[in-house]
Amino acid sequence: MVGSGINPVKAPVVRRGSLTSLPAAVAQRPAWRFLILAEIANFAAVRRYLGCARSDLLVADVSSRLSQAAPDVRLTVVGRTTLELAFEGADAGELDQTLDLLRGACEEQFVLDGEIYALEICFGAAAGPAAHLDEVRLVEEAEAALAEARAAHMPVRHDVAGFDARESRSLARELKLAIAEDQLFLAYQPKIHVRRQEIGSAEALVRWQHPSRGLILPGDFIGVAEDGGLIDQLTIWTIERAIKDQRRLLAAGHDLRIFINISGQLLGDQAFVDAACHMVAEADAKLGFEVTETSVIRDPASAIANLQRFADIGIVIAIDDYGAGLSSLAYLKQLPARELKIDKLFVTQLTSSNRDPLIVRSTIDLAHALEMEVVAEGVETHAALALLTVMGCDMVQGFLISRPISLEALTTFLDEDRHHFVSQDSRATFNTLATAWKRG
Ligand code: C2E
Ligand code: CA
Ligand code: CA
Image (tube, rainbow, N blue to C red; front, side, top):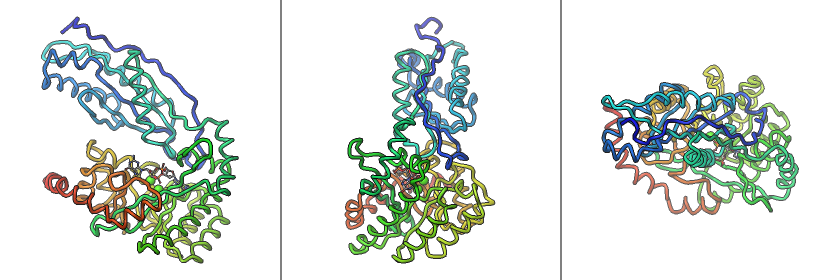
């Protein structure tokens, strides 16, 4: 179909926004998360010419070329004409390099049954700092970049910057006041125990109701608190509030363990560890601490000793974001952890990628061999829940069950046993998937 009016692929133009620097605390994790949306812009014309089934062969051809050009990227076909490519990297420039490779791979014409097709493939891309990245925002930026790429006929990149350096400094000053004036609050996200069909714990996630900026999510201020030496005060505030909220939950008839996120730098801070142990022991609170593996790698001896102190007073240790950073079996074995949380990156892709189910399944087996329970975070669909259940995952957490909600909303959620509706809806999906997965 030479000369069908379908334009060839154009040269890329990369647009950069300002970038925030990474806090030292996360320097060892992949620093950047990238998302590329590739769309066949002239697909409608091609399909009119070829029909549905045969034009889908061209989409499959594009998909295989892109995955050959960038084999480490997780590729998913979303919708009829769009491919989603997700990956991580140490350097922001890796996105441009991958975009070049992908564009290069599409330069050669596509051939179907001896006829040549010039597909116009648009690339919209987004990059964001991996630590505390707001995933929804990454997707929104990639979609916005794709819309621009469509109009401009060239690849467009957006960088998710969060607050810039000047704003971060002023946020740090305001955060000190916010902690003192109770502008922070906790949202709770329940975890369901799959076999027991019950909610035994919830994760506390901090939010900042800023008087003039509105609601600020932790992705935009935890790094600021870590860099500005405020993370200890913030976390002490969080533990105090969680202890109070736990008492209110208990009074309403709900006995839940509350998990709190602990930044890596606090595991080497003796004053913080002493204060936290004192508060928890005195209140006889039923808490858990979520820590990432990388927070241990920085100073293993003192981090492991402090985690052991927490465990000794009954705090359950959970390894957060497993798989997202440098995973080291050597450390994993030494940690007094009872739970392993598989990073939501793997879970959200579970039913759409070939690689992730294997990673998740082997992680579950590994954790069980180490006598840990496994939590899958980021469970958004019934299909993912069903697959995780078949794989033997112990607990699940994610938007499918509940978004992070206020203490009042959590109480109502528990009063009404709402999680049962989720599991009932999943049963049909479960039966289909269980059969398919067991077959092979
Ligand atoms: P995290 O510990 O990995 O927390 C889970 C994040 O994923 C939360 O974002 C939650 O809203 C989001 N999430 C939950 N379910 C789903 C799902 O099904 N799909 C998707 N796409 N996302 C889901 P949030 O609340 O914005 O928190 C971001 C990060 O901020 C947390 O990641 C944690 O690392 C950090 N953080 C939150 N609270 C605290 C805190 O009190 N102290 C410290 N040091 N860090 C905190
Ligand atoms: Ca967490
Ligand atoms: Ca996590």
